[in-house]
Length: 623
Image 1 (cartoon, rainbow, N blue to C red):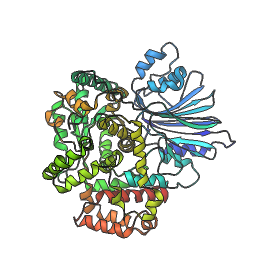
Image 2 (tube, one colour):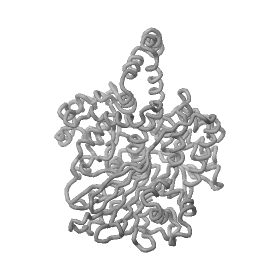
Image 3 (cartoon, helix red, strand yellow):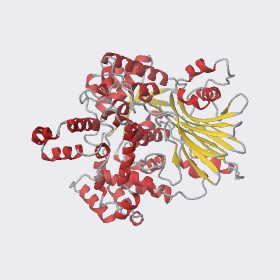
Image 4 (cartoon, rainbow, N blue to C red):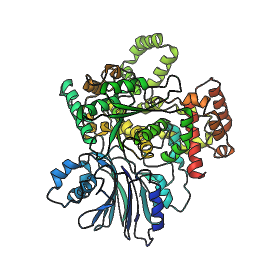
């Protein structure tokens, strides 16, 4: 795992500012503390900070081909690089290393842009074609590895993290109001625009080509659902298990020690079980726990799995003081605000693991491939309800629902079920936009067009028109929630401690096979991740398989009433925060008082505004 950066000169007689390249690299030093390299010519500068994992001695980058006509700066891992080398490249090229980096270079020579679709891994890289004077930036299919870019003063500036790009720019960053509106609506900025005006993220499954005629972004991969109803359930289970085993086997390739993050849920437990079946050495597992906060420790489940597979288990107890102390660095490493605080314990468990290993396997991605989230059950129930004729709903189903669920819950269900799919999804996944009315100023809501942000979801659902409700939800979550929340958090917090985090459930073969599994086997009845549960039955303890999904519980609401109380109060009610015009300070003061006095649980909206203000202070005010 590494950090890459660079500058492309469009040829407008604007020389690359070489003095700034050093600072660009220094801002990525946490991503690559083992080595650094720089290739510079008149039109291009490619830089890399390296965390050595494969071919430690000869994998220096940037790396060129035999005649130095093609150069690469690369972040990530291509797990099938040995197979690609044997199948397509042996005898055709002279290799000087055993690295996956060199395989990408020669694969591009053989197949050009079509070669990207053959890669199975997590990656973001820059390829410089000296002969064509053309730069190509590429990002993996689902966005496991980040890549950002901007155009400034006749140059394209790119990097693995935004802070590296900011080091090259000569002006102070400007907040992007469109992205802020998305953050207030969803908890993160969606799509190619970032929170920094003029800085963009390269979308997953896309590449960007730049030459003297300009730049253009093109898609090379998309998630295509093609459910195959012809096979019996047993064959789907066996095929998934086989692909999962192969994925873990490939991702165990490393020239440095590995471990596994273990939360005690079915995803991470399945990874531990599969690793245990493939290697004889003792496995090192790592967990973060909240022992000081009642009701938030998952330790008994991770310890159960550790005992089952005889792992050497390590735990870090994240105290409220630890949590508070890391918040400023949390903002710095994330670079864009998020309403998900689970990145903080993820940082601490990454730091713990880095003391023992250099690579960890983790369970991210299973929910988005195999329908693991609780909201899928609600959405499925609503869809079934909507299929019932109206007269039967009113005569039979509505009275039954009110009798069994109560008037309040029934009313919420019925009102949600009547909405278009994008509004139903939004209300369950995020929050009711009306909830921020009175908190965010009316003038700001109107100017930002917050309500219009739902159009993004409507457009995504249109891409999978005709699919089952479950596949529609999986498509949207794979396009938005997975890359903009789950994977950003995983990349930034692991890289902050210089550790590589691998995600076997996001193996390309698993992703594409999951798209062929009938929705009825991803969620059978109301049982999510049914295929996975069947595949690991007999390997993973039944108590883990049958556990209710909890996610990564963080006691943020309780800490806001105690250890974080003064911190949040001082940040949100600061005169500078009020002067930005994002929110109504009087209303925020009421929300704080309600939360502190247990009259309401306002922690989500308070955390959202708190993180936004800290982001402003760190990156816009630079304080």
